[in-house]
Image (cartoon, rainbow, N blue to C red; front, top):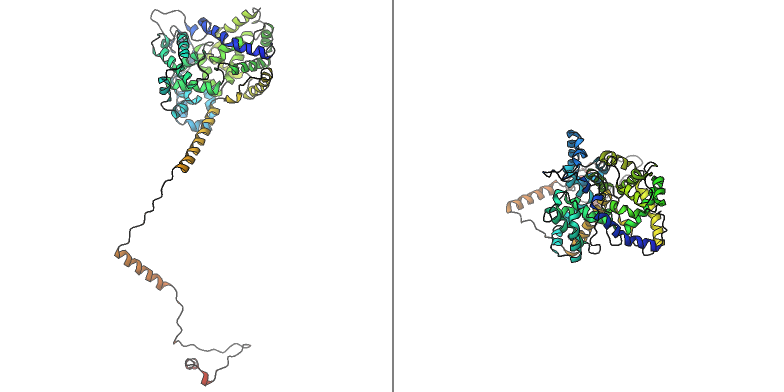
Length: 479
C-alpha cells in the first residue's frame, strides 16, 4: 500500500485532485515519448513515417526489419483465423494469444482489433445505432469541452493537422456520440488519445464500438467522474510493485511519490502518450487479447527501468526528480521487440491481480464506506468477452423462441389426398381379394373319408354305438 493512510479524507482528496493532475499531463504535449515526441523537426516537404507522423522516427523501428516472408506468413495465419473467428476463439484461443504477443501485422489491425475486443459483434447487433447517436445534439457542455481538447490529440499526425480534417471532425463526432450513449459518464480527457488511435486504424463506427468495449469491459469505472476503478488499481499497483521491485517501492515511499502522480497518464491513455508509437501498438495487441493485466506489467516494467537500481536512483533526490525520471526513460529501452519480451516476463498473473484486488478493495471499503466500484464488471481479455457474448446470444435466442411460441401460434394445415380414380379403385379391390384368398382357411372335412386305426395298448377303445343310434356318417366310418 502507499505511504499515506487509507482514511476517507485522503481517498476523497485523491479523487478530487486526480482530474487536475491528469489535465496537467495533457496540457504538456512535450511530455510524451509517443506521438508528440516523434517529431524530429519539420521536414521541408513534410515527410511522414509509415504510421502517418510528420518527421517521425518510426521508420527505423517496428516490424520493417522482419523478413517479408515472415510478415506474409503471419498475415496468412491471421486471415485464416479471422475467417472462422468463432471457431478459432472457442478452440484455439491459446494460438490467438501467442500471435498477439508476437504482434498483429499492421495491415490487419483494423480487422483484428474489433474482433478481439468484441466491437465488431456489438456493431452488428446494433445496426444504425451510431448514426442515431450522431443525429442527437448532445450536451453542449460536453461538446464544448471536447472541441477544446481535439487539437491536442496527436498534433503531428497527418490525420489531425487540420481542424476541419477527417481526423479532428471524426474524433469530435465519436466522443460526442459516446457522451450520448453513456450520459452518466460523459467525457473524460483520457478518451481523446484512445479514440484518436482507434480512428487511425478503422472507420468511425468501428472505432466507436471498440471504445465502448474498452470503457465497459476492459476498464469499467476508469472514465467515470469519480474514477474509483483507477484509485483501486493504484493501490493494487503499489502492492505489486512492493513485491516485484522493492528498491523502487522504497524510493517512491521515501519521497512521497504516490501512484496517482504518474499512473493516470499511463493507464487511462493506454500508454498512447508514453511509449514510442510502434511499441504502443504492440502493447494494444496484447492488451486487447489479455486485458488489464498487460497494463500492470507495462507499468511495473517502466518503474523498474527508471528506478530499479542504485545507479538509476543516484540522481533522484526528491519528488520532482523522481517524476522526471519516470517520464524520461531512454528510448533504447523502449524498442518494441525487446520491451515486449520483458513485459511478458514480469511475474504477474491473473490470479495475483484478483488476490490483490480483494485485499485492497476490502481496505478501501473500510476506509471509505461510500466506495461503490465493483471489480467483477471487468473482464480479463478477449476470451472472457467472447464467452460473455456467446452466452448472451444463446439466452437471447432462447428468449426469442419462447416469446415466439407463446405469442404466435402457427396454424397447422391438414391436406387430404385426392380421391382415387376408378382404375385405382378396381386395382385396390383386386389386391384385397387376392390377399383374402391367400389367407389360410380352416379345412372343410365334410364328405371326407377317415381310416380308423387300432389304439395303442393301454388305451381305452372306443365303444361302438348301436346301429339304431348311429348317425348317417357312421356308414363312412365303417367303410
